[in-house]
Amino acid sequence: MVFPYVFCRMKGLLTLAIALVFPLMACAAPIPVALPAADLAQAPQPASAAHADHGHEGAELRQLAPTALAEDEKLRVVATTNILADVVRSVGGDQIELTSLLPVGADPHSYNATPADLRLLSDAHVVFIVGEGIEESLLAVLENREGGSALITVNTGIDLMEMHDEAEAHPDDHEDEHAEEHEETHAEAEAHHHHDLDPHTWTAVPNVIHWVEIIEHALGELDPANAEVYESAATAYLAELEALDNEIAAAVAAIPVENRKLVTDHETFGYFAARYGFEVIGSVIPSFSTLAAPSAQELAALQRQIEAEGVKAIFVGSTVNPSLAGQIADDVGVQVVPLYADSLSDPTGPAPTYIDMMRYNVTAIVAALQ
Ligand SMILES: [Zn+2]
Image 1 (cartoon, rainbow, N blue to C red):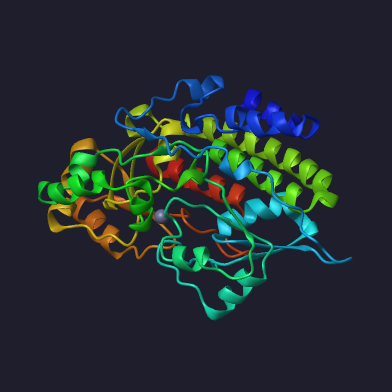
Image 2 (image 1 turned 90 degrees about the horizontal axis):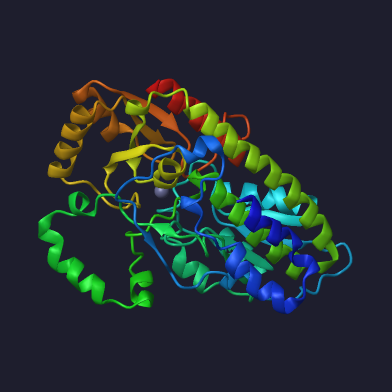
């Protein structure tokens, strides 16, 4: 990823015309399949991981009108998830007034806006969302927000992964429903919070590098007086993220290849698996959303798979009730390992920032699967 984002770092020096074209080619490179480092190049790709092209790459790198700010007034920024807010904070620093809508531990799939959230949204200059369905219960509120803030979707431009084993995840009795779904237009599918694309992009570091590009661009456009501050903060943070990406690849090398198998509470680690060389065996809720529920047959099938594949642990995020995973783990005699997938920890916990969260998860995964 060094090559593409050298272009992005240079884009401030280029003319507007080039800046509008180059990010489409450079920043929107298909990230989950890019494996530059020597260690990462060894990582096998999940055979059935398919990628979907949404056709609006680079849309968020559009030109944004500068915000009229009074002296001493800061750009008011809202980010939906606390993971995204931490990444925005790493670029915006003290120059912005940042609020995360979702408190620590809240499930982004099921979170509903409070009256205070509505006020924050209407008061904001810019709202950053992850997009592609992770804020599925907030979508209507986000789309109908008052105040005319810019809405920036950081997953835009990332090739989103589809369900790794579509056939097993959707039993035959859903066939008709799916045939209909395929007839839908993209807009209709959006309206149905389509769970067939994985929004959990941040589990692979290169995707967050992409987020940073989008965030830096948007903040610089909306608040040009501080554009250079945002650019230098982004440059420093990108270097940390690159180091983190390499650190993860080195850490997982300690896990025997035959043990690099993941079972999670819902489908959260697809990008992590593709990037760092794991196989996703399945999940307790066989969906990219926690709003779905597993059938008895699906749970039985997962149990058989865990036993057949010799999976050593079930990883459960902090936003999900662990009781069902606990029952399965007890039945098949594996351990439940807590992780942070859809939310950071509180500031005194082990995962108060995105980088801390990734380090914590990798350490826990290595310890459980070694
Ligand atoms: Zn999730």
